[in-house]
Amino acid sequence: MRFNLAAVDLDLADSSISVRFDPPIEPGQTIKLGLEPRRTPSEGIYLFGVTAIPAGDQAVGQFLGYGRLHFYGRDRRIIWR
Image: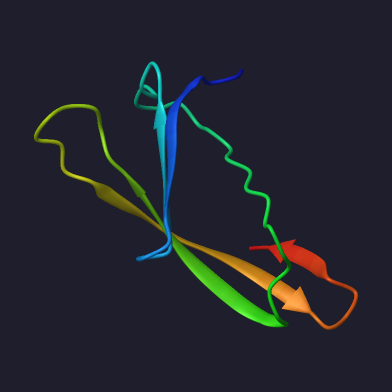
């Protein structure tokens, strides 16, 4: 199933990406979001947080957990955990 994007905002000040769907994702639906880097980071482990915010004017976000990317040496393999 494909979902329509209403907007994608990049905030370099706090290193965040906001994605809004139209229509909003219904409870119980699962989505997979792919991001493509402009350049490959240095070797290491990078953590990012994922928060879902429901539609509405007074919505409260729910932190869903952390994602993790591992970059190993020069071969630039990416491993998702």
